[in-house]
Amino acid sequence: MRIVFLDFDGVLNSHQYMRGHGTATMPDGVTGLDPAAVVRLNRLVEDGAADVVVSSSWRHGRTVHELRYLLHTAGFSGCVVGKTPDCAHKPEGGLWHGAMRGNEVQSWLDLAPLYDVEVASFVIIDDDSDMAHLADRHIKTPFETGLTDEHVDLAIKMLSEPPPLLVEPTKEAVLRFT
Image 1 (cartoon, rainbow, N blue to C red):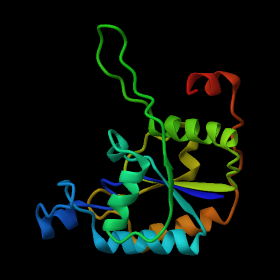
Image 2: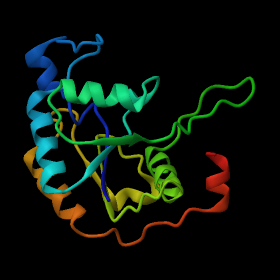
Image 3: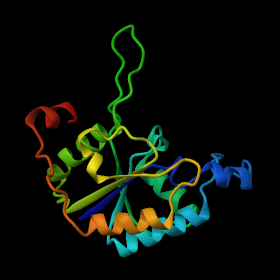
Image 4: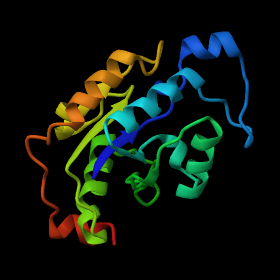
């Protein structure tokens, strides 16, 4: 299986899109996604023979089914197979601490074999840079423009090559998220 770990803000929407379309909303009332970026995502998953795992903060409070609906309503024709776990934590009496997005992606990769999912290759599409040790599988999009054809071309190329090293899940990682 090939996986695209997908962020929304700064990838499927952008400053450019928002300036031209204001506050157009989708059926559930959230700010919309750029149809041109969704067409690019469709090309990426089709030509890259990949499925999507949502790593966006849009996953918080939404089920995988709801995320599928959001994307399909916006014109996405691919398959959403999951979402990364939320690894944020709040120490007793303290403030919430967000996890690095790369660690959340790694957590999903660690758990995938438990569900008989074998990941042959993956790419992370995100406008943030917090990918930790997975930075070599990251394509950083600028929030100004979002996903471009050049990003898609690079992602397809990366998906055709296995990553240099897929980190094997550790017993501690499995216990932490089960």
